[in-house]
Image (cartoon, rainbow, N blue to C red; front, side, top):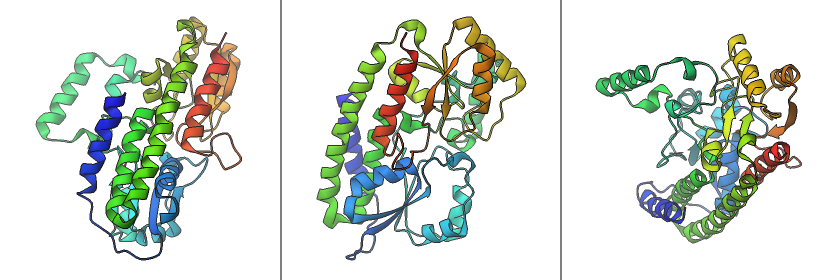
Length: 328
């Protein structure tokens, strides 16, 4: 874990050398973040030196967001645009074209090794139906054709669900702010150090929380397939009727398979999400006798008075909600 944090810090310093400086003034830098988790991270690092606009706000679903003229104007006026990447913001290129943005675009997931769909088992449809050889053939064909797998959306974009990945997010954001505003770089890196210490501490806390769950209580059912990084880091299996995006629809066959598995494995709780309609999960709970274990936050913070107003509070809330519902 410590080696990963140190490696990310070194990468951040190297990245800062590659980002052009924006014009300096006494005004805070204008930063646009595509969704609330990124906006929170930028605010923690930039503090009073940045003015942050978040396009998709609290409880908003970035998967289905439709940019507005107001969003285009905000992007056009921004010094820095912070995006997740990994095709999470499918509408982003259209928005940038419409805004004539000419500032610095920062991909927060740069340097992260993303999870490929072939490594994921959360969505209950085609992952179980496709033979392993078919996936291998597909990857070979893409490689021979010279395609970047990122262009085909073959990676899970929900990388912030890993606190280890969050350090890379923070490093990329810090490097961008420091290069654009070198006069305040010391503040940015001091804020980064404090923030990373909190991420490390929370990672340890969540490992301790989840460690108490018995092996037969580690399967989690959520609305859509957004928690695979969390599951990988903490030894949980996440299942969902919907795929990687909330734009996908769960088929009757998908739902039937999930219901069968819940019954077969004695899964006692399912979890709704703050960005999705909970009626399908309520139907599944009624069919199986499972309870609704609570609300999880897959990709958007709550409002300031909610359970997850910051990224750190979101991750802690998710872990505590899971543990409370799954503990026998």
